[in-house]
Structure formats: C-alpha cells, structure tokens
Amino acid sequence: MELTDQNRANLGQDGAVEPLVKMFTSGNLEAKQSSLNALHNLSASKANVQRLIKSGIVATLLQLLFSVTSVLMTLREPLSAILAKIAAQLEVGTVLVKQDVAQQMISLLHLTSPVIQCHLLEALNAIAACPNASKVRRKMKETGAVRLLLPFLTESRNTKIRNGALNLIYVLSNDMQGGELMEQLEQMHLNTLINIVSSSSTTDDEKAAAVGILSNFPVSDKNVTDMLMKANLLPILVSILTSSTPTTPHLLAENVSAVLIRFTLPSDKKLQHFSVENGVISILVKLLTCGSIIAKCRAATSLAQLSQNSLTLRKSRKSRWFSCAPPHSTDTFCQVHDGHCSIKTTFCLVKAGAMPPLVQILQGNERAASSAALSLPCNITTRRDLGKWEQLVSENSHVYNQLSRFLKKGLA
Image (cartoon, rainbow, N blue to C red):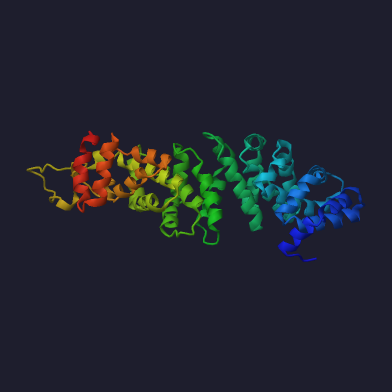
C-alpha cells in the first residue's frame, strides 16, 4: 500500500507497529518478509521509528543482518533500510553506537548488493556522526575501515554508494592525527579526490567531503603540497569560492578555507606569491564578510600568515639617489608598513580592504574567529584602543591613513 506521511503516522498511532513486530519475530519466512516490508514502509515516520525501538526489535534485526543463513539473506534489504532509518535519528540512533555493530556492517559492504550497500553506508554515516561515537570511530580506523571504503570511490558506478563512502572517509579522517591519513591514502586516491573537487558533475556536498579529506592532511607535509600543486588544485578552490552563492553549503567554504592555510604558510614565500597571484586574498576577505564562524577563523589565519611577510617585502619609503627604478606612486605608500605596498607584492591587508571585516569580527561574540583575527601583526593591545580602531573604520573616510598611524606602534 502506498502511504502518505500522515497515514503512516496514523497507522502507528493506532497500533499497527506492535502486531507487525510480533508477526516478524514469531512467523515463518513468508510472514517475516511481509511484516518486514510493512515495517519498512511505516519507518518513514519518526514516531514509528521510536515505536520500533521500544518494541525491542533492533537486536533481532542486527542478528538477522549478520546471519550467514542463505534463506534469511533475502531479508537483508528491508531490514538494512529500517536500520538506516533508526540510525538517522540522533536521539534514538545511539542504540546502534556500539563498536561491533559498525565493524560488522563494514565487513558486509563488499558482500552485499548495491541496494544494501547504500543502506549500510547511510547507517554507518549516521552512527559515526554521533557525538558519543568517538570509540566507535577509533575502532573503525584501527581495523582499516578507510582502506575498505577507498575502492568504492573508484570502482563503484553507483553515485549514492560513492557519496556514502566518501562522507564516511571524511568523518573518519577528521580524527586522524599527523601522517596517519597519508598512510591510508595513496597518490591515486588523492587524484580521485581532486577529480571529484574539479568535476562539474559532482554536487557541492561531494566536493565538501572531498576537500574536507584533503584539508585533514598535515599542512607541513610538503609532499602533499607538491602533489596538490601539480594537480592545479589551488585555482580550482579559488574558483569554487569565487562562484559561491548564499545557497552554497557552509561546509564547502569551511573546508576550502582549511586547505588554503596550507597554501599561505609564511615559511614559503614562493607559494604565498603563487596563491596571491591566483586571487586568494580577495576570497579570504570575502569569507571574513560572509562566511561562517569556522570559515572566518580559517580565513583570518591564512591572512595572518600572509601578513607575516608584508614588512620584509615592502619597498622602503626612502628614495635612493642613484636608483634607476621609477619612483613609486603615492597611492602605493602604506603608513602601517612604512613603505610602498600592494596586495600582490607585499600581501598588504590594508590595501586589500581586510581591516573593516576584521573589526566586525572583533566586535562580535565569535571567540574563535576573533582570536584568529588578533593573530595578525597589527595587534590591538587594549580594549580602549580597539574602540578607537572601530570608530576610525566606521566613521572616517580616510580610515586607512589614520588607522595606519594608530597601529604603527603595534607593528614595532
């Protein structure tokens, strides 16, 4: 029977779940199949999922899912779908947050049909995302879950399966430390992730997960940076943020801004120049204005890294008698850095217009982003000074000239 959401809820409220559960637990194979399909239909209602939990059916479902009896394997498809519905509800999905459950589900992935694989990956993603599932995630990593999932990124033609595996790898990679992730992935896998990011046929959610995995590699690993450079990843990331709209998922911008920290390390001026030539500063300033708290924090970190070299890259204000170089335009002079600056040559944040959005961050209650903003060389030492800075930015049409004189002491 095709049911509307309201009819499903009404049937559950009228007591349809309990007799179906009894029929499933005590009936023959045909009765189990019929009742399980009916329960799958009803499980689209959140209230009915609650009733299924209270009935105690979960343990029986798991037992049958992991059964090797060939006759019972025909039940795997509807029961895996029901388990996915249960796991999707955070308040009740915690009943599945057990180490052995996740491990056994992963072990089934390569032994079942694509339909069941989709349901299992949906359930595994919900389980791994639970706040109290840290032990489960750790166990999954220790037993090689990432390596078992990687083939789905390249071999599966089913988009839903690939996305499920991609998201689960991303969730697990968030907890990986140091070079742990690099031990799991090879260069071919990095290329696969980059292809997902650059493809016009992939969704923003897929790109967010792929970029998220790339962002979890240690930023100090130069081998990874070299591979990402050879794959021309940076212009792709800049293009993603440049073309972003208010409907673009926050996670995509957050993960892209995390990768940009790698490309703005102050220890590599050549890499910084390459990043700035590709328009990184403008999109970082854009994130300060309209990004999420996490994106603002990461953008401020990248800008702080770039600004660390502004003083050493500036051109002195003093003219040289015997210099053959043409004089600098007065428009390029920056009193903050006491020299001639520009966005592309000295990564000057004053010239880039980064100061007003940084002030807005400091005015707000976003502690993490404020901390990152204060890591810029233009340090503010007291709240009274901060108030002066805010007033200059908001009221003075020549804000940068006056602001530079005010902040000059902080640059010493």
